[in-house]
Image (cartoon, rainbow, N blue to C red; front, top):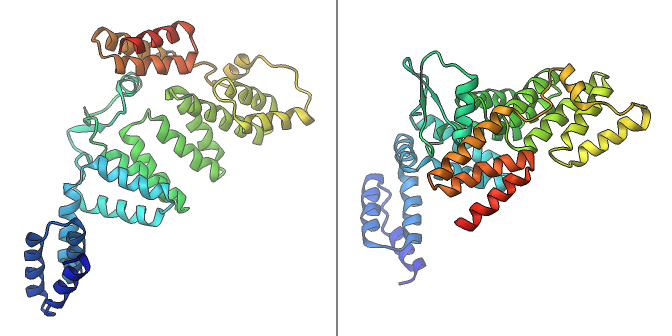
Length: 329
């Protein structure tokens, strides 16, 4: 029998009695192995369920899905611009699944993408309660981040900010989360929070693109406040990390109507208490981790942190080390 014949026969045997039909469909699951038939049986069974049964079924299914698989499914909706479906999936997930790492009277939970972020956190933050690091791979806090991203795309800006701040509470040194918050503040013309967030990015980010964007955001803030000499220095500084068209355009605009002498960029930034260099702690911790992993013969991990160093410094000795390690793999 063909797939269509099998499904037609199954449907013809349905009686209209929900309990009998559910029992019949469950029996059919055991009689057929074809995935497509199982999918159609699932749809038929779903239509027979009460609201209470559907909720119980969704809960059981969600609890069986590893969080990383769920996150991948959300990204697939984002890639197609299907924010409404992504929102529903996220809200169902957060409602049904008991969050493992909620507020706890004894522990403060945090999640880091790598040891560099954890060491930065330990250096700059103190926790009133005992600190617990969520195991790598248990990316439950990332659900809040994605929720914020989806809400931003649906113009739910207040709710998006709340979700992103919740995500940030689990990883206060995340350049990714801070950069997304800065995009929200930029879109809402919230210059005060945009400036504060940009400075935090310069303190904690190890991604040149995030650093460049933070300098551009600061350049924009100072330009809007009529401080064009500082704005120019910031846009010029951003070009050290990314040759972005926006910086070039803004510099052309400033130079077109203002005759500003060449400025000492570091002096200008220091006068404004804006970091003019990469955070030394990021460089020192990255070097320590690169050497430590190399000693342990964990060469891929070592390469990652040498890569962080090279992307930030373009040091030829670091590049030589990277090439050496690649030959040893």
